[in-house]
Length: 241
Image 1 (cartoon, rainbow, N blue to C red):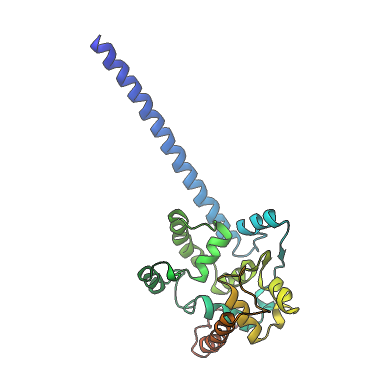
Image 2 (tube, helix red, strand yellow):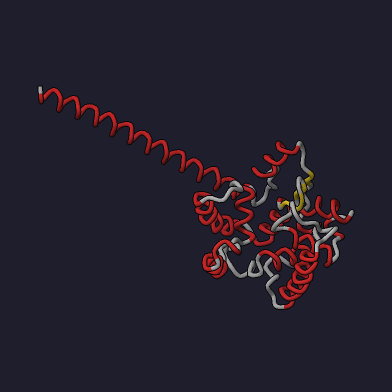
């Protein structure tokens, strides 16, 4: 009787181990498939403009439609590119996707500041999802250097400016320029560019055309920062040919 019970127990254990092996195999295949898809996406979007992003798609479903028009980097006022770099990632030209100094400062300061570079934001917007989680942050940290290895800095900034949210349902700098100022992205002046950059961290609660005192102060700081990075060479990786 004891032998039968032991044999039965071994058979059950064997089946459980078999299922565990199958589950691990499927998880491994799923992870490998995801990595392959993202790798293809990184290569593809280095030359093909993303038609949408997961967040743009979900916002379109939520509010009915979105305002978005893709424009090439050459059709965006140079001061707009300098403004978002000054506002979001002043060392954009100096790092390889992850700004370790900013990350350490963010960790030391807790939740009061962010350490994400423009490159990380592009990875999050184009390939991942918005909700904060360790899984998303880990994938973001892995994929960002891969994207930087394939894309030029100019391309990273071009995609960023075309998929960033500037108001509810307003995506990309062309739609934002027309929405707030009635001009094209190519016609933005330094003050308008600085105000657009100033609302990026919180576009649903800030306005570029009717700025609060806080946005005005931020825009003034960004205006100075954009001039500074142009003068000291920190805009060299995306300016010029």
